[in-house]
Length: 493
Image (cartoon, rainbow, N blue to C red; front, side):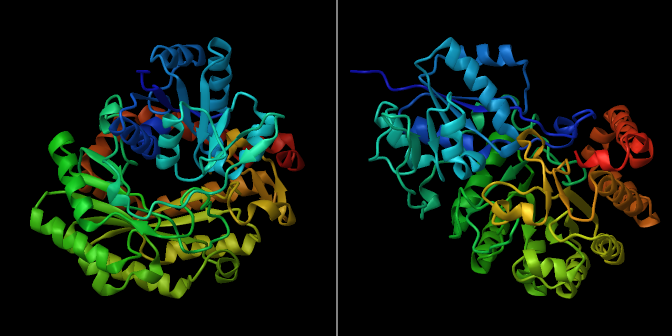
């Protein structure tokens, strides 16, 4: 009887910071590769040995990473890839193919799903692209001895003449409770090696947690290529059992629920809170919430369940700009929600973007004023990035200049420059936004409050203070004043 195929899953290092500055991602936040953890659990449940190597959390020089992969004696390598992580993964794939040409190289995740035809055309080391959700597709490939076939939906591969063949979309999983718990045991150093963002949790051990898939909204900047537009969720019973497992096995005391739409199904949230309270697990949580779905009653329910912080996607303080890009969002209503959340004793982080298509100096000023005017506990400002798979991607050049350098498409670099701006000016406004927000008395008091609200965060911050100071100096050196000798126009190149 033939031995079952062995598969090694790889989370590549990728480019995670700003060119010219020290990468502090592994100090500030490292998220477990949940997709690969689930694939590994599914493979092993079916009898296929699986290994997971996370080079994002534990980076190695490229040649050492290749040797680490080969040491697992795989028949196939499964890479997950965001846009910023794809080239790092592909460079490993090329070297793995050179060392063992018979290896089957699989790529999945948002970037390969969105650009499968281009990847097969331009990147010869890629053998198979898993398009969309991968659990059932991977099992069928393993059962077929890794030979791609038109009979396996959800894959793209090269035909006899080198042509790209897509077998069609696979129907999305409807019952997520059929899935096993992610294979956390395959992560080296879990959970300590996977810290949540500093000042974003009250106690540890802590981890990220995913409870649903799919999004029914159609915001212009969101990539929904993997999980689609149909909302599907684990039951409240599954979730609380899962949390009980994490508490018993790893001592988890806080989770950050990473769903886009955790609160979309109100009844599920209410049942989740009821079950969580009845089990008395002593686990608190954060979540992301659409402001239009939060009312005073639901906020009180979340507080009762142990919600410590809610992240609210605001994006911009300019209503006209919001109306162009975001589904069902009224800034006055958002402000009211912020007040309700704070009154309930829950922290609220405002999630903003800068450089979105249609952005102007006035809209940036309105966004900064909005963040300062309303009682956010914290803010996060990302640099708009037109990801493949998002509705705006195919028409982005109508709105400005786009440098499609995948390594830099990590929301930490301005790869898109709206008309009327230079990259230099965007960087200036970005730094000013942060400096203005956090240098206010309320910003300083919020930081000081973390010494008792999130003591481990403070220990992490103080323990890495020298690194943060170095990064601050590097960012200042990249400021417009320091770069003025290069000329404003050169910043567009």
